[in-house]
Length: 433
Image 1: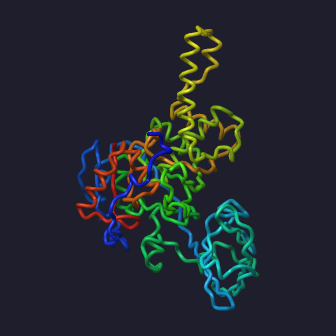
Image 2: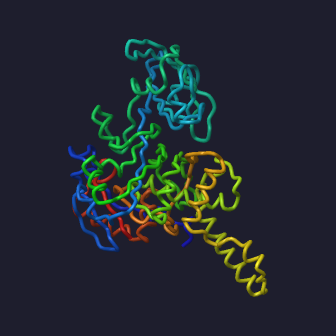
Image 3: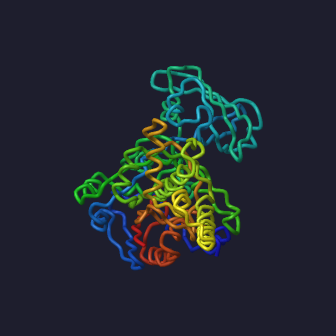
């Protein structure tokens, strides 16, 4: 079946509320680890993960940090309005945004919207020994998000300081509980660095300094990428076929040394979490763009939702043309030289990205991806995957199914029948197809 016509109802399973982990274990690395290897399923403790990995492999982590993205305002009537920051609008760069002083704009979701039809909201804040007034003004709609302008009357205070002081950490809605002080620590990976996510890359929550040290001792090469996780990660698939589901855009940053390390490992990697998967696999399609047009701009490197599947169609068409050309005996040396490989390798794609960075005088790639990975997708870089157990009928479950060649029920049936804990604060799995 063509990928676009996959019915999401085929990716359902019973998930009782009591199987959803509401809180993490006291010791992160004592969670259970399901090990799926070439169709066989077993289990271990996460602390022993390094023992299941090949020595000398490359493991890639997402170092994004969750921001305290929920801001609350009260109208004069007493109505509570929640403004949920989704992505920066002005300035659009995450790093610049958090340094902003005095004013900035975000694309947001608004809770209790019917009570905020017009006007400006305001609240007084005390940050350290500084008191200031902050306002929020709702502007136009951008897609399904609201453009909101924020202003505050003390330019000595940055927006990062405001969020750190009065923002609330956005734990997943399916936990059905209020954010607690402990979540500020437990809902961050121990290696989180770059602020920007509104949801944690939860596969990484199991790692501790002890596990990272064990990886190093086993000779596992570690690299980090940044993908800022958007609220769309919780967006349910409401359409019958995934062709009608729109994937959210997420912003990525990959440094030159990461691309170089990928090449040293023949562009084969162990991904920690689906966010690392989407970043690594998107790099291949960005490299294809550069191979087709070395003058492509950074914005044009954006990977659209269905691009991998269009690339496959183009590959088939290219192969058909090649066959026709042979039949027509168009075999001149010039033609052979000018005709690019129908399916460039991952190494060719990553090397093209490195050359593109050099020609543009850049040390890191900043772009975005909307990639959907579902059955029918061919993985280019990721060879093993560490991931949690995902919601029924979710795009993350489609990604897992594509990775294990449709054998996801074997994994989930085992987890359900062996007391594994599910979703963000739940247990982990190592998938080796």
